[in-house]
Amino acid sequence: MPPAIETRSLKKVYPAPPMRRRGTPGPRIAPVGAPAPALGPGTREILALDGLDLEVPPGEFFGLLGPNGAGKTTTIGVLTTRVRPTSGSASVSGIDVSANPVAVKQRIGVVPQQPNPDRQLTVIQNLLFHAAYFGIPRATSLPRASALLAQFGLADRGESKVDQLSGGQQQRLMIARALIHEPEILFLDEPTVGLDPQARLALWDVLRSLHDQGRTIIMTTHYMDEADRLCDRLAIVDHGKLLALDTPAGLKARAPGGTLIEMTLDGEAAPVLPLLQALPGLSRSTARENELRAYAERAGEAIPLILRAAEQVGRSPLDIRLTPPSLETLFVSLTGRKLE
Amino acid sequence: MSPSPWQVFGALIRRDVHVVSREIPFFLLRTTLQPIMFTFVFGYLLPRMGFVNRTYTGALLPGILGVSLAFASVQAVALPMVADFGWTREIEDRLLAPVPTWVIALEKVIAGTAQGLIAALFVLPVARLIMGPIAGLDFAHFGLVIMMTLLGAFTFSSFGLLLGTAIRGEQIGLMFGLIVAPMIFFGCAYYPWKALASTPVVQTLVLVNPLVYVSEGMRAVLTPALPHMSLPVVAAALVAISALFMMLGLRTFEKRAVS
Image (cartoon, rainbow over the protein chains, first blue to last red):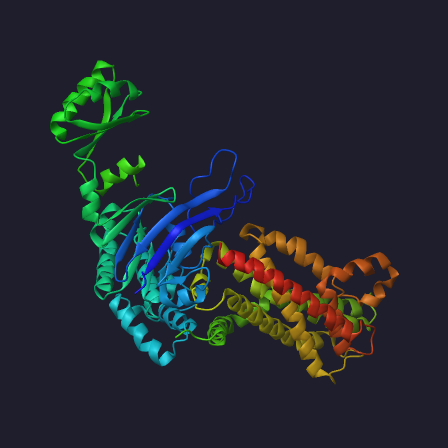
């Protein structure tokens, strides 16, 4: 059985965005996929994916974790035939997305980052017409649509206009729409962004039950807890590159030992660094501008030592934050920056 | 089992018929009010005042129909397309349909053509009512009238596809001011092309304007006794222009659909 998705040396470079006059009102139009770091000084091209290799077996709940602009949405875009790769290859169920996009579309369901229901149609018509675009006759799609609306708590909203739905309801409608043609693989791009905590938990339940039914799910997120709780395996990506790939437990085991201590000082943090390196029980300390970071097995014992070291060079702490060993601390150690 | 492209095309058409049929009154108001007001001023008021010869209505009516069908077709395709690709992203559910993307673009053009036909069929009796009896108006070739309307509407629908995918959302006002308005004034809608012989430079320059061929084509089939371009020339020009617009429009559509 071919992998559900596979990418080999996948690369995507967006051309330089068109020059915009300053102060021009109106909506921003961006290509599918969030803007990512520029290639370098002088070029305005955007390198969104930089040789990404992924392989996901059928039935897996797979997460792409990374900060905004990491290349997650572009990866989903390539796999769902909406973004043309610059080089490398990507396939879905063994079918090359560039060579045969139509066959790929037949097998996938896509939940976009922003709900984009057809606002000219009612809730149930959104499902029925989407089914019709997949050649499903009404006799089949009508009971299926009713069942999906019931499953997603929208049973009494079938005849409503889409605009009357809340954000969470619209997002659930998008998932129902993505499932109406019974795809093998479901793609979700940041499905819980903008949802209130209750709606987010409800959505997690929905995704878990879909996964329990054996469906392959590919989800992007920049929420650590979401990735941790839902996904079988996680890929951490940044700047279009794969930084780590493992189960959440496996990744956490790789997190640098101890608690991450972050301290904001009232001045440049670099002078404190040499003093820290001599301290026992501290590892991997770094300084950037006013920020000091270090890992300690026992944070309670380490903090007074750090404070004393800071005092010696005339620095006082403005803020101290602690993060226990987690995906978060691994992420910071891999990328040098925080997710949110 | 993948559906055939035509099965999907049918579903897309059903969606547009469903959506557009609810909006027909607004659609007609939006696209035909201007030509109808123009008809009232130039086809009713001015002739009664004696500023304009009464035979002018024979030259005006086909042109008014040309403007109506062109304006309706171009708007029917371009406006939703700009919104869809610009901010609502609603077309994305259709871009996920298991068909090549050109099927989706072609469906939009066909639906726009139908809306151009509806606009022309609405304006024809209204304009005739406003202008009163029109010398030279001849419905003997009504089949040809429909054919010419469809060809003209298809040309402007494909133009709408090109504009709607090539133009950014914030430039939509500019598009109507800089492209559509001059097209209407220099489209031989309000005067026959032959009469431009008095200003040969203008007569030559307007030949790049597709509306000229639509207006002249409508004259050829509605008022064949009055001066007009020959029907084969008009048909050949419109086929060539619409093929060009379709080719460019499909290319820009593809670029917006797959980045």
